[in-house]
Length: 126
Image (cartoon, rainbow, N blue to C red; front, side, top):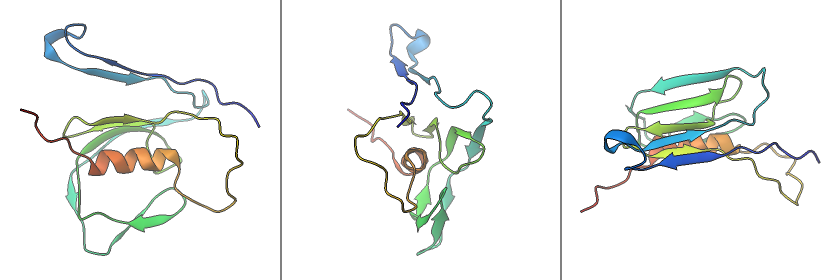
């Protein structure tokens, strides 16, 4: 089994980040010639019992999804990294497993990243 090259995430908080901002970033371990798209999706309401087409399978759609900005390989539905309208940032990291992958189609890690952006919000803290 080939070992994936490393990818790393970073977060900088004030005072290291200027103007009270939080900076989130990630390098990519994807192939150099793979097209990465930066895309914006508006918040949306969805019909009850509707489905969302992920990369290889369909899953139940949630009633409401948040606005997101993501970076993703052009060939798949999921996301390498991104942030939603509530400031939730998530990124995909390569892992090396000891167990072989199942032969059935399933959600990719990048599908989980995109779903996380669409559905998570963080309540205001006191």
